Length: 182
Image (cartoon, rainbow, N blue to C red; front, top):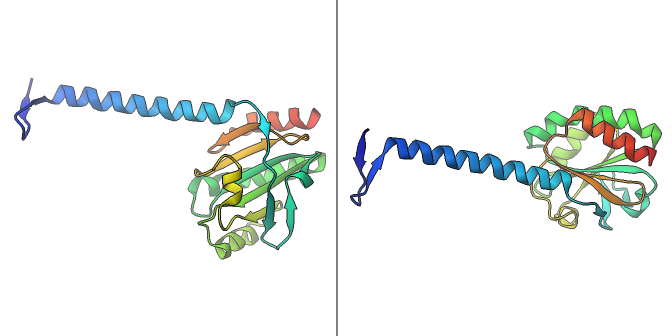
C-alpha cells in the first residue's frame, strides 16, 4: 500500500482517498435523488396568485387559468435541458389543449427578452410564453432557481406535481390525463 506525506506530516493513502471520493459521490447522488423526490412528491398546495406578462404584452393571472389543467414551466434559452424538452412540451400542449390543458413557459429573469422572443418565434411555441424580468413569478413559485422546474396545476388551482428537470413523458401524460378527468 502506497503512502504519501501531506505537507503537515499526515500520512495519506491512495486507498483512503479513493474510498472518500466514492463516499462523496454516493452522498451527492443520494442528495440529488432526495431533492428530486421532494420536488416530485411534495404534497399539493395552492398555486400562488401572480400576474404573468406574455411576450406579446398580454397580462393574465393564475386565477384566470382556473378551470384548466395548467403547466407553469420555468426555463431559460441558455438551459440545455429546457431546450431539449421544449419539443415534448409543444407536442403535449397540442395533444391536450383541446381537452382543457394550458401551459405558461416563464423565462427566467436573467434570460434576455430578445432571446426569449426569438426562441418562441423560431420554434413556433403554441402556448403562452411569459417574461419574469425581476424574478417575482419565480419567487412566488417557491423561489425557483433551477431550470427547468415545472408545476402542474389542477382545475381548482392546486399544485399537484412539481418536476425538476425533464419529466418522463409517459408519467407526465398520465398525470395530465388524470387531472383532466378529475
